[in-house]
Amino acid sequence: MSISTPVGTSYAERATDLVARVNQDRWGSVRPSLYETARVLSAAPWLPEEPRRIRYLLEQQAPDGSWGEGPLPYRLLPTLSGVEAALAVLRRGTPSAEVTGRLTAAVDRGLDVLRSLPSAGPWPDTAAAEILVPSLVAKINGKLDSLVTGGDMPGFGGPRLPVPGGFHAATPASVARRYESAGSLPVKFHHTFEGMDSHIPSSLVPDVEGLLGSSPAATAARATQSPAATAQAVDELTAVAQRYGGLFPEAAPLCVVERLWVAAALARAHLPADALPTVRGWAEEIYDPQGVRGAPGLMTDADDTAMAVLVASLVGLPYDPAPLDLFHNGSHYDCYIGEDTGSITANAHALQALVSHLRRCPTAEHTYGPRAAKLCEWLTDQQQPEGNWIDKWHASPYYATARTVTALARHGGHHATRAVRKAAAWATDTQRADGSWGVWGSTVEETAYAVKVLLSADNLTPQPQLTRALDLAETYLRAASDSGLQHPALWHDKTLYAPTAVIEAEVLAARELLRTRRPAACTTADVERTDA
Image (cartoon, rainbow, N blue to C red; front, side, top):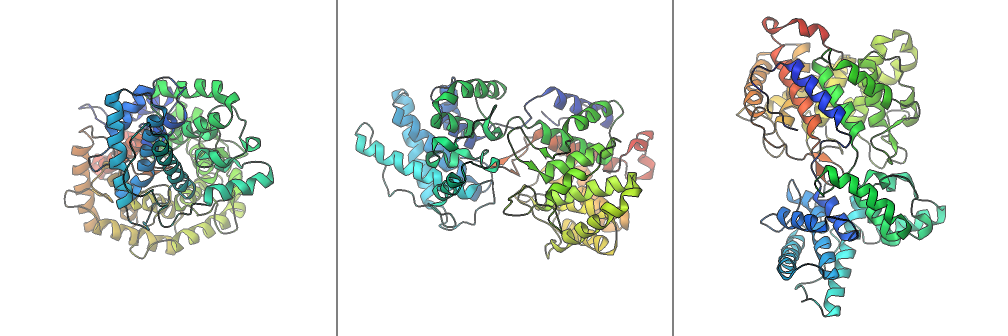
């Protein structure tokens, strides 16, 4: 999907078109993942289109020898995955002499990068990195040793890879042992099963339909541990590969997340009448009294559940926040049962859902009012000294700050108002000269988030500095979002990814909010604005 906007096309037309495109895509608009594709390449030589994946692996290696997106610490896991996959193909001995030479050179360069990384990070808080990193280091070293002792391939110079500081070599095996005694592997580990596959006894290999944990990598790894699952894996992985040109994203399908986040983003401006029936259909299908999961095979979680409650409220469905009770821990919401680190944005979405429900059902005040107040207090307590928030599901503080500010501004109160103003001051101070924002460089996505922070503060107390910052941002977004640039990956899963449709919705909504913030610019469409 592209955010390139035809001249003269209205917000309503663009938003309606986006909703229609999302509705027609049963997989989700994310780019293929180098990490995930390399894992499938390594584990599934029986899967069609292997030459395509080998070409992709070679094409995606950066000039410095690394793989992946973002700053170098984020490239640790993709580079480990790329090196291990190249070694796996070399050990199979199937490529031509030319491809063998290119893979050998790629491994050498990748190993050089890995050996030059900081010994102790800091490393990003991506999904199950504590399991995936040491598992890949062990697999790489095992393959290096087998290539040398086998005598069929030249050895690779240099010492074997150490486990980077902050990670522990024994973690994958110790986690597997813990659940072997329990007799089953929790669903929370299905998405990253490939990190423990060599330590899991056959009795613990999950027997589920569809992609294991919504992950192609986990599904391919399961097939290596359970040959009976290979035929099913071929069917499941082939279907995903057809959508992504023989390659694989980190989660498939991503429809639940995409639809909920797109709907909520557009509702911040307004949901066009032509899109409303489709969005209402999404909400009816996704909302679940037992909790919502982001993709088939994942755990139910507070983030997706909160967004389902919110979107249902925004489109007028008579659903209440009761499913969120499953995750409440007394002060805030755990993202899922057994969570190690809390999520700011999941709780911000929960607060938005509670406030939206209370505005439509004031009689629920005695049930959800105190909980919303306590959650507001918890979120304000998590604000960084500079005025922003950070979260484990996104690399940029602008995402977490926009989500939290939106929730706090809707809730109101002295502490919330003070936190919103402090966040707006931080956003104003960090705006770039061209009117944009970005943690690593200017992006339309992060600029859209910052715009929403400033608009929330401007609605409280208009200030000249906010107006100037918003004017600059509007100019930047008008030029940049019409250029069709590819969005950098900023969202956290096992590695970084970019949900294109969600980003497009955020930018569309920001531009519409900027356009309609001036009284003279208001149109009858503003009547449709929804409380998001």
